[in-house]
Image (cartoon, rainbow, N blue to C red; front, side, top):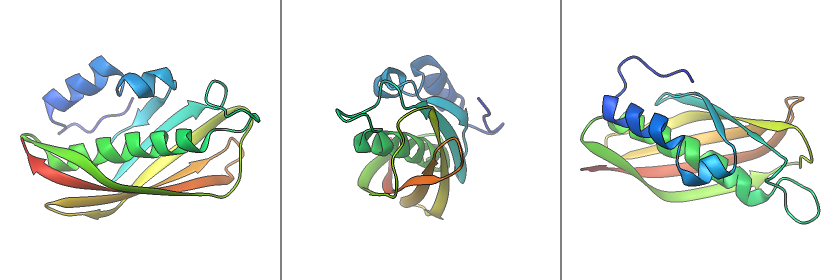
Length: 140
């Protein structure tokens, strides 16, 4: 896992100790890179499929929200936290096997709001989903 050097030590401890949270662990999300402007993770399709064998649309949202929330928390900095206030996804194609890779990039990093867009791609680099999330930044 690649972490920025100036990251809040308390946030680092929470990320490392929790593995990104209970749901992220259950879905076997592997965080590869963290930052306010860009974060990357991967997730297996197996274990996250819906009844007809496709990667569940909700799994795309969990992956996008996991990255968007952490990226916003990094931007918020010490003594502040991020709260998701809006999320949406556009699903372009499906995956049935392998891993998906999610790249989360900042659209806007403000003082009170952050918006990130996450592109989720299959092993061949084809776009599966685009997830956009907005977080409200609050003082602790």
